[in-house]
Image 1 (cartoon, chains in turn brown, red):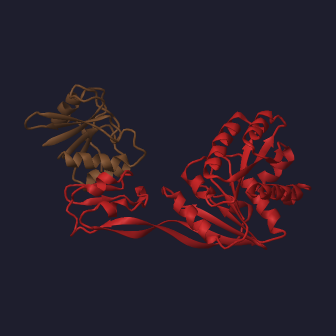
Image 2 (spheres, one colour; image 1 turned 180 degrees about the vertical axis):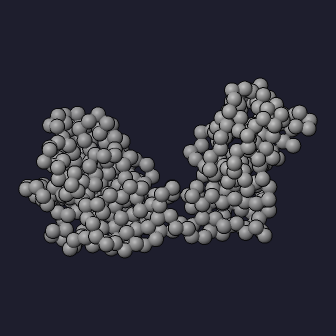
Image 3 (cartoon, each protein chain N blue to C red; image 1 turned 90 degrees about the vertical axis):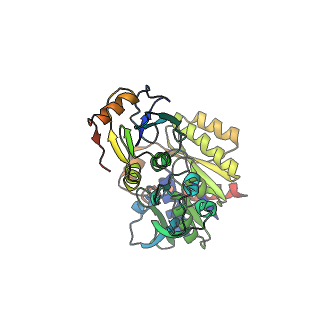
Amino acid sequence: MIVGITARAPSTSAPVEQRFGRAPYFVFVDTETGKAESVENPLVDAAGGVGPRAVQMFSEHGATVVITGQVGGNAARALGMGGIKAYAYRGTGSVADALAEYTAGNLQPIPL
Amino acid sequence: MKIAIASGKGGTGKSTVAANLGFTLALSREVALVDCDVEEPNLHLFFPAPATDVPVTTPIPKIDPDRCTLCGECGKFCRFGALSVLKDRVLVFPELCHSCGGCTLVCPQGAIEEIPRTIGRVACSSPIPRLTLVSGVLNEGEVQAPAVIRAAKALSKAHPLTLYDASPGTACPVIETIEGSDACILVTESTPFGLHDLRLAAEVVERIGIGAGVVINRSDGQDKETLDFCRDRGLPVLMTIPFSREIAAVQNRGGLICRDLPGWEERFLALFDGIGGVVA
């Protein structure tokens, strides 16, 4: 399973970004192999409509779970339709911390 | 003749000038007043009357799922995020679509057609003899103000004399309003903010290549900086409306100063003559 996490920098040790579509980086972690891939988000400075476009990026990377702070309405709709589950991480920890919390079942699902 | 009324800054009195000029001119000739501030139309408040609505539609994409191969080209192309290509379907977000039609062009399968969607309306009324009021109204949450402005302008096209009331600022809706006008009245106020935004608005009008004149509203008599700016740019100051309790009182109850205060009908007629001189 691939989990996508919004991050402030390109690494699993980077802090989690609370914003979804305008997060500077997306870190995709394959929970089976433990391999992580960081992708720079080209939408950071886009004028609008970043939510659905970010969801398309998650879909392209095969992510079935998103961990972020919060998602907007359009993003929520796209995530819901795309069968991608979203979980809220409101802490100040790193991408790895958020992933550990998710694996431990401590994160609340974001209603889509 | 088509005259646009713009300001750059909100709250300077554009609609005041448009409504009073429209009313004054309607006393002697046919005039159409077009409210192009489609996100916040307010001219109808000066002229309450029953209106006829014409819906405004804009094309949005419709995906044929039988032809679509989920290649993702449309989603990559759309810079507004109106199309999201997922694993098994393409999502369309109609309210994000700017109707550029690009998705239908980039789709290699020809799987996208365009269907109309209502985004607003144009309300037409005849509140007083010889005055036609055309108000563009963009539905809440919609982004395509220029489409509604185009529709409002198209409906008033046949009128020999038309006033366009633009929205504040200098963005797309203002450009859409000003384009095709013969002259532009720039309304400003004698504050640093008013002058700053007048400068931006004057630049827009200059770039589009339309002659303009200035109305200074709520003047406290200390308009030197504004006057200097206008002189440097060759913009005639066509009218100055003083900051006065009497005028504010008329405005506050939704009145028209050209109708309710003596001397102002003549001054708005002079404004019309002045802007006519700018056209030539």
